[in-house]
Length: 113
Length: 113
Image 1 (cartoon, rainbow over the protein chains, first blue to last red):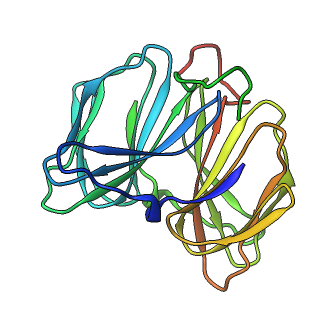
Image 2 (tube, chains in turn red, purple; image 1 turned 60 degrees about the vertical axis):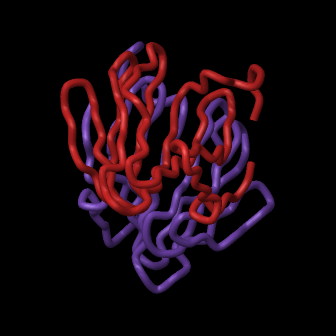
């Protein structure tokens, strides 16, 4: 268990979206996605997991299935199992997303926390 | 699947912390907790689930096991299975928390989304 200052954990990379792991258990992981303008996570799907993107700072364009929407702070997009999702920072400012997925496909070990 | 404007979903109740359900699947649920000054969620534990509180607006005092900390926007507290956790708005302003728990103990039905 722990307290985490997610905002202060932000780190950006020049070449691609940078993911900062905030915590994980076998049940879920939680990351901070840090996107410079133009950076993205390509559309993909997880057959056996639920995931959401929550906008903490900045603006992004999110895709869910055949739908796309621009999201700002306080908005989220969530994908059901098997649903295609992706996100792109189409703005001219940095963006921060709180991202959680359950269950954790990289579960460290059964029951681990 | 869906897009959700979590911030605009905020609703407060005069008598106790108000929970707004943002989405749920069998894998996890995601709520917005809306706390007037003085409102709280009593300390409790979930034997088989992982949970986190992420501060969207305002400030709260979070308890994890024997630890307590005041958290502001961009900070989170997460609890491993079986770990006691709770939260209280000890400030004089409203507070909003994004809360996710996995798996969903109220799973509507197997595989539901």
